[in-house]
Image 1 (tube, protein in one colour):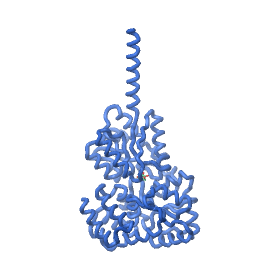
Image 2 (spheres, rainbow, N blue to C red; image 1 turned 180 degrees about the horizontal axis):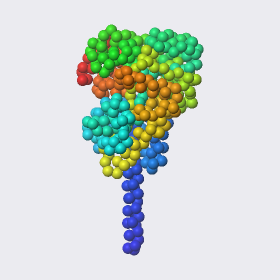
Image 3 (cartoon, rainbow, N blue to C red; image 1 turned 45 degrees about the horizontal axis):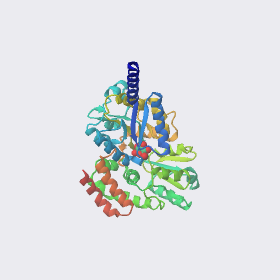
Length: 416
Ligand code: BGC
């Protein structure tokens, strides 16, 4: 009897230890990578960790640019139960770190020499108060145009290099009987289009003045009037069902030849690749007309939360896996982004990826690498939301251009 009890106790102990070990080797990851291309890229990370014995507990929250994910995260942190790692962008990293909920990755970063290989523009956000809190996964950029190659050829084959040529191309697509510009009407997508138009209209200096420095004169002057006028014009090339559509469904329209082009970040390429389409053959990637030479960047980063104790081991394995150069290649060639490290070869990347890497290096050296507003790298959330609100209302015809020019600096001032 005693032996049986002992055995049972022993078995229970073994089960508990195994349970603890299992828990220690698990990461719970909150992210918004739910489209086909995004999920395929995320699988690269899941499989990498699984090979190392780390179980992946998935917490996907659909919704481009992470707007819904942030609400879910707030609930978890408020309940005192943060996930192990969370996909975050720019100023949001700072906001969470300020609350004192971040893990400290300094030892790992030091051991692996992150300081030397991760660009300063990212480190600004991957570190808080001088300490590493996040592992940057990639660098995306938003000022891209994705064009259906067959539709382009039919329209004469010349890629547009400024807004006027772009409008002429959209007219040609319209004449082909397809939707000229595939766009999904949600604030972050409206903002993604708007920031490209700002850059194209006034160049990098104007983008800096208006979007980074929030200069009231730049936010309400003649150049900005041109921006809003262009937005109104572009609106005339959308289809009737654009309102509320997710970005990947708009990409699908261009892939299927139902639309001519889409302005979108390079996560869009992930969808093309997923559909077995080739750059140069099936689609053409160019910088948004008039923006070659500048890059509006956003980088996905996994912020590690202070989960303490056992879970920390798996968390560090994940952070280390993310910064592994081989992983950076495997992941980013699927995702459409470029590596978050400067020491990774471009050899395995397709032509759009190679262009992305070359453009990034050029912009970085020229001082024309600037944070994306719509994706959290230009302004903190409150200011970003306030600006997106005006941009969306104007695009939807709820504000005239005159009203938008008045409201934009006011909204910024109120949000500061
Ligand atoms: C993220 C991308 C993501 C896109 C659409 C962006 O903010 O940086 O990784 O694919 O949103 O969801």
